[in-house]
Image 1 (tube, one colour):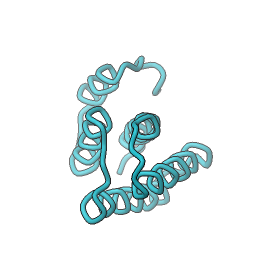
Image 2 (tube, helix red, strand yellow; image 1 turned 90 degrees about the vertical axis):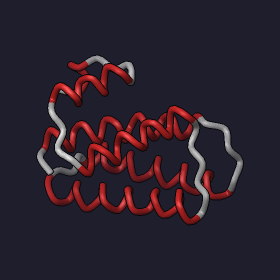
Image 3 (cartoon, helix red, strand yellow; image 1 turned 180 degrees about the vertical axis):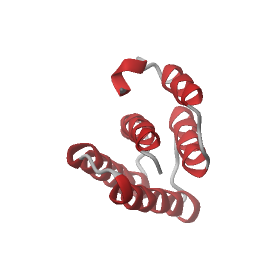
Length: 115
């Protein structure tokens, strides 16, 4: 995927990580996934992966979370669920910059914070 889409997805993953860590759920699955999400998103941010390395790491995160969600009954709060839905939709299709900026605005961020 192109670099601008990677930046958008990374921004949304950071917000997803923040939201997921704030939700209250004491299940073992959620606690394990909270640590996994935090670790992998931090790695993406700190190592600043790009290109095919980012794509592989992102695909790994998507598969792991989707497996936990479907098979292990991972639970999301309303906001976290909406974020995850948007991440999966953007990952599957081409998105325009206007759509990307609308999403960022919707989640309460300033556009220039992502440029």
